[in-house]
Image 1 (cartoon, rainbow, N blue to C red):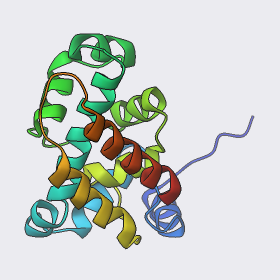
Image 2: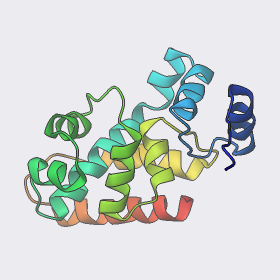
Image 3: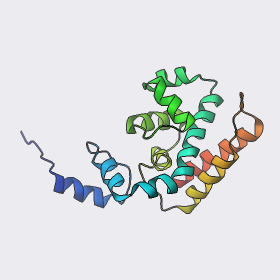
Image 4: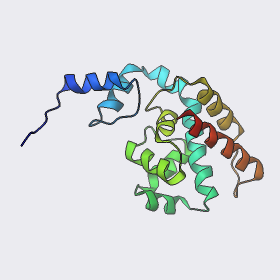
Length: 162
């Protein structure tokens, strides 16, 4: 029986081949990306994207009339993680949570990875859309018509940027 072995050199080569696409090889993808960016770059360049991610999750959940508890249970994560994501205090989001949110909200996982800072985008449209979405999102109980429109436009941009 053949048992493959994957050493650091092989994983690094595969990482380089995917040109910053989402992969998770035992956390290597995430760690390599974090090592490529210094803390200042991460906090300033991705602020609007992380804020857009927080609002995207909140508005998408509210669109489905779900509580934070219901969403957490449905995607199999801790309630605290959903709260931190939505209030923008999550320092990082687990790739498994991002994948589950992508499945739940029918949004490309790669786009959510970009919004959380775990992947990079060479598409300026996505960055611009993130800034506009974060700036236009406001907190209110039920989704207002303008919020619904903003959310739909942003989701369409995420789907198109895939």
